[in-house]
Structures are given as C-alpha cells and as structure tokens.
Amino acid sequence: MCAFLLVALGACSSSGPDRKSGGVLSPGDFADPDAPPTTYQSVRAPSVEPSNTGPALVLSPGESGRTMDLVTKPGDPSSASRRPVATGRADFVDAKVGDINGRPIYANEFLEPLSDRLAAEAAKLARANWRQFAQVQIKRELDGLVRDELLRAEAVSSLTPEQQQGLRSFLQTFREDLVSRNLGSQTLAARRVEEETGQSFEESLRQQEELTLVRLEFQRVINKRVNVSWRDVELRYEQQAKRFNPDPTARFRLIRVRTSDIDVVQRVAGQLQSRTPFVVVASGDQNGFNPETGGLHETTYEGAYEDAEFWAIEELNEPARGLGVGQVVGPFEFKSFTGWMMLEEIIQERVDLYDAQRQIYEELLTERRNQELNRYLQRLMERANVTGMEEIEQRLLEIAERRFGPGA
Image (cartoon, rainbow, N blue to C red; front, top):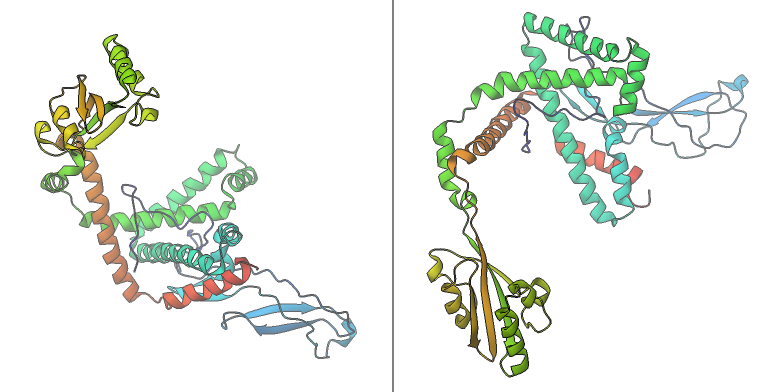
C-alpha cells in the first residue's frame, strides 16, 4: 500500500472535485450508507448501413469482460422479430473495472478527471513513455480513491446516533448556506457551483460529505494515536544540526592580471588606489578571473576561518586567511599572475531551537500521522472487499491507452 501524504493539520484530502465515490448521506439513506450509486452510462451507436431490420438491442461483451455494452441499430419498425446483422465494431461505452467495499469503479467516471492531462501528454511522448506516465497518474488517483473510500466507509460504520444526527445537521446547514449565498435560489446556487468548480450542486454536497466523513475518521483514529513531545523536537534539532546551522560561506572577489602585462597591472593598481570600488575594477575587461560576475568566488568551509581551504591554489589560500570582511589584499603574485583579493562577506545562516521548534513539530506530526495512517489503511485493506489493485490498474491503463494514448 502506498504512502499517502496528509499535510494539512487535522484534515485529509478528498478524492478530488471530479470524483464520484459515493452517494450523499441524508436522513433517508443513513440506514444503508454503503448502497452503490446510480450510474448513468451514455450510449453511442456505431455507423451502420441502412437496412429494413427493425429496432433491436444488441448486447455484446464490454472491454472489461464484466459488463455489457448497449448498442442500437436503425431499421424498419415492422420487422422487429428479425435478428439484426452487425455491420461494424461496437464502440466502447463503459466498463466496470473493480469494486471497493462493494462500490463499483467505472472506467468513464475514473478516467474523466485525468483525460485532459493524458491526452496532452500523448501529443508529446512516445508510446512507451506515455504508458509510464499514465500508469503513475492512474495509480495515484486509484490510491487516493481507495484511501478515501475506506476511511469514509469506516467512519459511517462507527458513527453514533448522536454523530449521525450531527452530520445530517451539518450537511443541511452546508446546503442552506450555499443557497443563502445565492439570493436563496437553489438554481442560482447550482449554476454558480458548476461555474466555479465544474461540479453539479449534488456533487458538491457529496464531496463535502466525503470530506467531512474522512476528517471525522482521521481525527477519531489517527490524531488520538499521534503525539509529539518537546523532547522529540529537541532530538530532531540535534540530529539535523547541519540543516539548521549550515557551514558558513565566504564570498571573495579576485582580480587576476598577467604579471607580464605591466601597463595593465599599473592601471588596476591605480584604480584601486583612487578608491574605485573593488567590484567595479573586478568587472573590467582587464580582469582575467570571472569579470562577468565581478571576480566572484564563493566557497563553504568547515572549522575555523584561519584554517579553512577556500581555493584549490595554496598561493591564494594564504592571503585569503588573513582577510577580514571588507578588507583587500594585494598586489601579490601567484604563478604567472598578479592578484588583488577582497573578502566581501561571510554568510552564516543559523536557526536556533526556539525559532525552529514550530517547523520541527509540524514535520514530526505529519510524518507520524502518515505512518499511523498507512498502518491503519493496511488493516482496513485486509478487512475490506477490494478487488486486486494491480488488475484494476492494468484494466484502466488499457482503456486509457485506447482512448487517450498516442495515435488514439
């Protein structure tokens, strides 16, 4: 079971604005919270030659092998008893690819929120690369669907009568608020919801129901098992000392001129003596060391400054170790060059425990919630009636490739 990241404090992610993972709980259907939703499937008839056969319904095996596709064929109403003759391959309508806790997963419903992304990548990737991309997207979406459905179902089964009443009241209030914010018109509310989210009014309510149930289960089971103490925070700070107190960085600027170019050496020396800013001189064409960056050289060092290694050439380390911030040394000779060097600044980023404690606490809390959630989901997976995940992924990938893959 894959790890699922829950970053928000005290909240879980929903299955997404386009997922339809269950019916809306209302006072009338709390007695049967796991009843499968009604799924409406569109029917697209293939192109056929006109004939004098009557209207007929042809049932042919669907792509999943588990459902049937419904195909209509035109003909003469008077000859309904005749057997129709298929003249083309039936178009795929929909397929059930698996179940989660008795709730069916349909290809149309599952792939719809991924369709634009899959189609866009198909125009850019080779088939093998596209399949890898599509498999990752499908697995991520399926993992989220399984997680949310397991948590939702567990929350429904564990609600007390008082909590059921509270949930009904909460959802009713949510519905009324949506309507009241739209001049008391449910039609106007539904239109605005669809414009802003792409969801229908009922889908928005269903998503809010799912989010509420998942949050309830998360708080009921996960939060109460997770604790982060002050000692935990201290230990993490000590373990990640380099992260909060990284090694300092020294910023040098170097001017390098060939000693044999006497005129250039004298010109640079004169500019520096006349108090021309070091970075301006280091940016001139006469500088043979990174003039485009003003002779900049940055290096991170450990230990004491006077013992550090800043340069690969020892003749440069010796003058560098004697510099204070803002000081200039030179002219000095190294190899066949004459040089001047300035220590511009030392960058030392330090975050003490007091300032880091909140960040560390949040990180530890998220990590431990994820660990506990994974363990809890694993137990739910062992109890739940979930068909083989690998088989579902493969079926969805095959259907996605036929619909959205390269050349589809």
